Amino acid sequence: MKIQVTQENLNKALGSVARVASSRNTLPILANVLIKTVGTRLSISATNLDIAVTHYIGSKVTSEGSITIPARLVQDFVSSLPSGIIELKLDEYKLHFSTGTYRSTINGISSEEFPVLPDIKDGKEWTIDSGLLKKKLQQVIIAASNDDTRPVLTGVYFHSSEGKLKIVATDSYRLAEAVVMDTKHDMNLLVPINATQELLRIVSDFEGEVRVTYDDQQVLFSVGDVELVARLIEGKYPNYESLIPKKFDTSAKLLKSELLNITKVSSLFARENAGSITLEVDDHDQTLNIHSIASQLGENIASTKGEIKGEGSITLNSRYLLDALHVMTGEDIVFSFNGKLEPSMLSNPKDKDYIHVIMPLKS
Image 1 (spheres, rainbow, N blue to C red):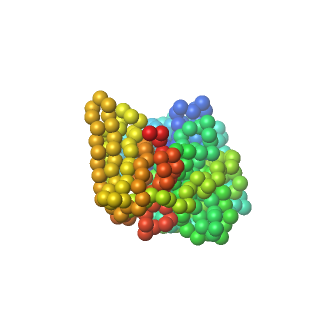
Image 2: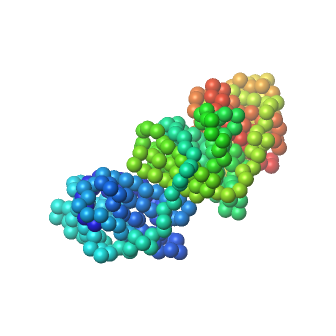
Image 3: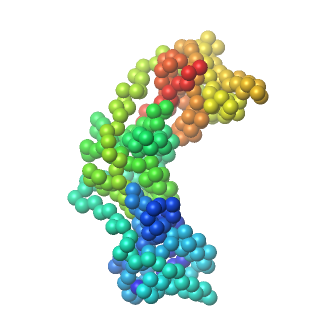
């Protein structure tokens, strides 16, 4: 193999894929990236067996070939090089780099030992605007679980319902649902949280259409010159829609900025009490109060005015409330609940495509 690439393109490609490579895996080869020529392009790939990322870059190919080299080393090395043309030349299992006054060699392992990257044949396909996908993922993934004892909750659920594509995540303490767009496809894709987090990083600086291809076992996201393939989580997602209340006895329409500020202040006094804060609304004076106690430090009561219907109180985890407010759009927020022991819900009165449900704490 003998090729020429720009330092900028190679550095960007390594940045896209190297995070997936893991030196903590029991298979040493998974700490490497696969570098190989594909026609007139160079592909850089990494995998942890659950997900695989490949980034294609333009190159001048003199002779073809492939090799795997340590991901961490080559990423740090290439990012330290000056901009310009880098020549890569493979001699058996040694990859030689030369650019300007730099001459370096990195020892590799045969590409034949690298896992076969998954390929989807005869899969179904749809497209989505990258900006829309980014927004919806940001709103949802905060609610996914990291508890491996319940694998289905560690995924982000892409599914169709009543002609709509919806993205959902829940850890059983909170639930986020985003309606994405109209769809004619019948789909149920349970994508691992680490794959959706990686996808979010990839789409963050991309403008254009993202192509999604899937079958019964895996899903492929094509984002410009980058491809991410993930193995779908097996199992049936819980009937989450039954957890979403249809009617509320108490609701408060508030300025999001005001609710965010008083929740931040209240959370400071809730640290030693597992983040526990009590929200109390009163339609008599149209006020929402947040009460938090730090037994060793003191206590806090913060208030904001709004349009209040009904009265009552509920105790929530302040971190869950802050997480939801940070990803919600619009100036106003509607906070609704039925009682101390039933789920509460946050929504935007002008955008019905996103809801966030938070389960109460025992007060």
